[in-house]
Image (cartoon, rainbow, N blue to C red):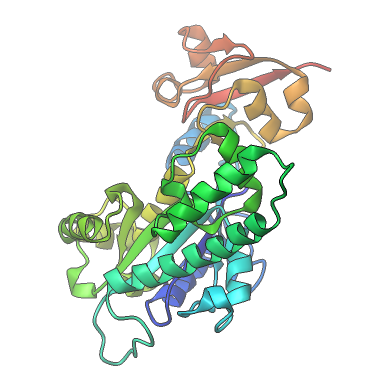
Length: 367
């Protein structure tokens, strides 16, 4: 499963600064993780997961290894989507390119300007409320064009559900309601899903703030304020100072932790953004560990064991027999697989088992 996050925003809101910080984070991890920049505007970074470090230490001791096994966290692809200006839905600026790129990502990361800097020209950006409204309008207009094109091709003998779904979508879009907030039936969704609507995608709102405002206490207040102002869920907002994040990745890891702790955060803004993307898509990680590697595997919440096995190798789904599972907390408490089996913490689960975040697993696969 690939998780891709498209970073969008008006000019000079800090979008590129944020993306460059992500690229620096990627490069800083290059010695330990197999990541690379695919294109100048694409970067792949690790999903923060401290559980892997602990599993590696346990595996080293249990397997009597001379060094820690390689760590392989789940990864997220960030795409810096350029070219958004007012009128993008009608092709202004790089509008068509912008819209085609955003259709390909899993989550929209919408950066708005919450900082003040007289040296940086706004170029269309005025304040978070208007910035957000501008981009939402462009995405709604693009979806409206898509829906109207389908509507114009509907024939009298077509499935009536097509007209019902399209008319409902158009009515709501005209009212300024994005597709993700419209309640559709399963039959209506079957009609609309192939359209890859932009406003149906999960969204994260990143508020890029001043350096002197960037504390955990202030962030909570700003989330409350802007959630009410923009009429969005608090869970969709991340407060970041892109300038500080860019500087943080240049520091030693211990210095990063001290700096972040002084600001009152439990993790960096980039880490919180990556975790938020994971949450917005309803993803969890199960874990595997051994001499070869310690790895986090990305799956959808609610996935059953055979489907999780298929993430490792597609053949494993149909050849699945059982999954030996230990919760991460139990695995750590008893120091590995041997202790888990001796203390009855390891259990065999069948095809109907619903995977839980942090499950440590060994799959039993047939020939």
